[in-house]
Length: 139
Image (cartoon, rainbow, N blue to C red; front, side, top):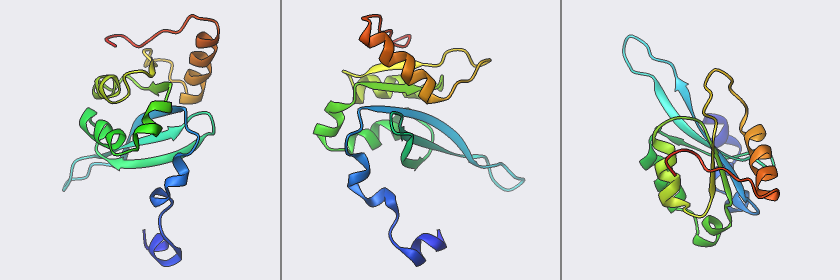
């Protein structure tokens, strides 16, 4: 963070980073490993899957964290999201169902075969083009 403060403002403050996004990927990451004095700290990462670029990283890993981030974005941006790729973390599907009700949710339901969000997105987009889109369970 010192480098960010020294050399300029964080890119996450630039609203232009959200321009043209139609498909997002969501995943939680262990940001700081647990030690004897603190628990593991998780963050939720959001990416523009089509362009392979990071949109934001927000503290926490819950449906409410994701729903709050999406809800803070302008309505026209939310309306242009057509696909959301997510991992099996339980809180994300319900947040996406509420915050982006028109988006197709694509779930990587096989934890034994992890795939990058880009591979999930490619499959979702091809399925949509051929009329075989599948939403994630519970959507």
